[in-house]
Image (cartoon, rainbow, N blue to C red; front, side):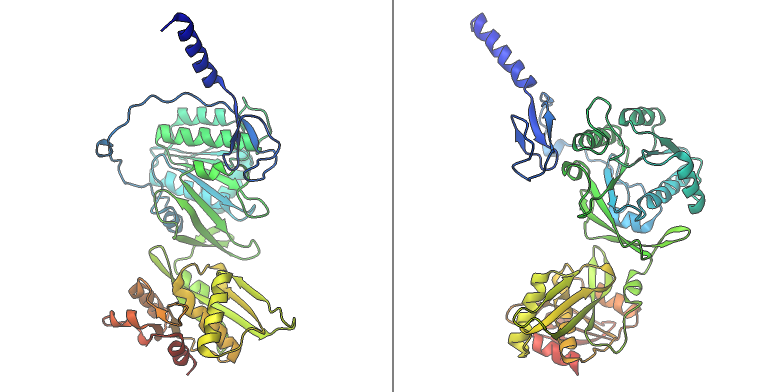
Length: 460
């Protein structure tokens, strides 16, 4: 190869490494030039410069030669938080805790860090706050009785300084409150901007992986419920937990929307009290505590949230529409398309006319009916309200409904029935296929192969 060709090749390679690209911080779209608005996701001012680095150069390795890491998890001491995490914190995992302002994220975080510090006092826990002073955190710690000497506090807004402190301390857990409050000094932009949040998160995640330290990041959400900052923030972390609830009510739900180390079906339930957040050991009793007696339009179903059965109330209100040919269909906590499907099945198989009726369906307590096992309960609540016939309050309703009007089997029936029996339920209307496979059930079973048979059993 000639000297000129080699020089050209080296220049081309250098130009390729130094080439500046632009990337959308929300969806990851790449472009050669800067754009004011991302053509992929439509976000304004989300495209920033990105200089791609060279490849790592590491050799590939066979899957059978990859060393297995220990599956041991670090327990936080808060059972409902550990449940949502999939059993506890994993070494090197980055966890994003998001929620509305004032919902209790910092309260939950401080309580968890205090318990971790108490369980292993030989290794400290580091809490970096970019929003509150140390005195403010101390006041919260007094209220929560979270004053472990091993819980170290640092007020900082520089991610570089915070990580330098973490390298010196070598904590067993690092917590940052919040990722939108910290900034990387080498980048332009104010804390919370797309480029800043992206850089801060990437440095924190890289540090967690390099040191094997579980890292908790607190994130704010926007008015539409999305996490503030670039969408790549959710992709960068290992686990995304949403803390949900109404600040005017005492109860909070902790859901895992993403979890590389566990199930996303688990939820944690908390109650906000003057002394802080307290775990709700029996969420089923909580969701059914205010259930009205002898009222039509109410049915109870047992959902599976990961490994735990959860009894929730499905409410329906059916009334003659005042809008003529445009009846309203409103569903909260259950898919609206599923409600429309079940309404059509009731019209076809039960002969009821619902096309001129307003139908409102709600899952009480803020729970979500996201599995087909709740179909029969929704249909029963709608028909109960339409006929104004209350259902037996001690009857559980289980089953998936098909378009032909058949009632299909559901999974983990034994756990669902056991939970209902503990709460005083006496009877269960369930798919015939499930009833045949049960031995010594804790409830009286009423098998049903069709929607018509199930409604007859419930309405008599």
